[in-house]
Image (cartoon, rainbow, N blue to C red; front, top):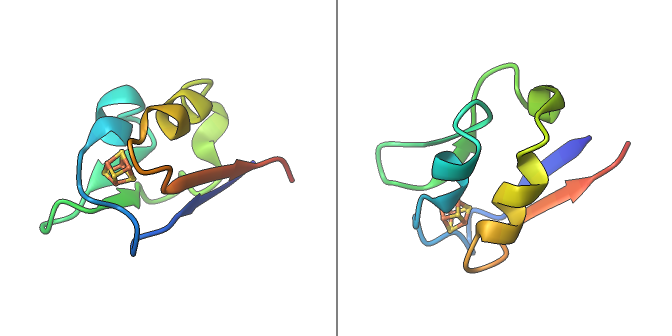
Length: 64
Ligand code: SF4
């Protein structure tokens, strides 16, 4: 899986990090980023849930 975060669209709501904390985190400015080594989602079933939870649809998930 390939995860994309549109940081221009992200408003720092934090829903992604709350929903899938093993994949997403927030940087010092509150914007979403992927944890090191989790760029492929790490097999987490919660990644798609996190994408749905994002209020501005900043997260895209694509199968490889
Ligand atoms: S849920 Fe969306 S808006 Fe909120 S931090 Fe994550 S990517 Fe950004």
